[in-house]
Image (cartoon, rainbow, N blue to C red; front, top):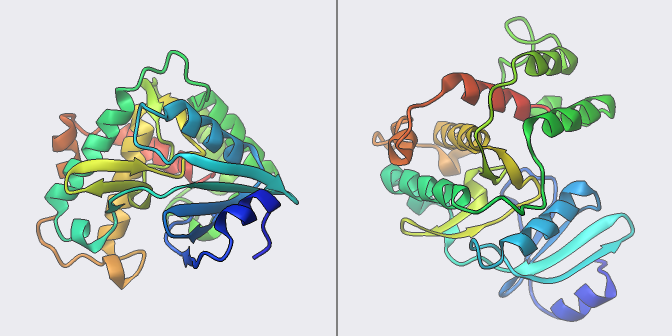
Length: 264
């Protein structure tokens, strides 16, 4: 593995393994007490560093040990989160505990003061980013929900984007993780010990995170990501997350933000 000089000096001779969990497109290397994330040197990588700095002392996020750009790539060396991913078998086997953990993580995000948050992820900006992705061929059509496009769905990403513009919901602004999936939340029992993958984090509608979390739970319990997370547990109830949050599900917003995420 070819690394920038400063990063290389900080991990020299350390054994490592590659983390294959997640769908961010980044390469993740696990060292003893450090994690190296390698991704395209673009706005999302810059925002991740920006938000990790902003959230120090506010939320349990990794500490940056080094960050360098090298030959079009961003190299971020950070501390390793304590606990285990929310998609670990121990959590998947106990859905009540899992939903409590995920709800607690959402509440902690929403408790952060956003008056000086340096990242705008509000809906109009996200729609502009979605348009950019469409125009530059960046929409992953191989990884969309089966009914989003086709005979019973939208004709193509352009038609979906037009629908998203026409049906914009009113936003309830808060600090949003932006990709609130199970592999991005760490915990110990029902206590959140880490938030990772913060490239989309910023001010946004809190229902964006609820929608992505709901979808992530559904996908993991349906076995979409392999037998490892295939649920045989009859305890799972897809309303449990909403009960833990103390809210009624807003299905229109949930559908909207899941559809929006198809363009990223």
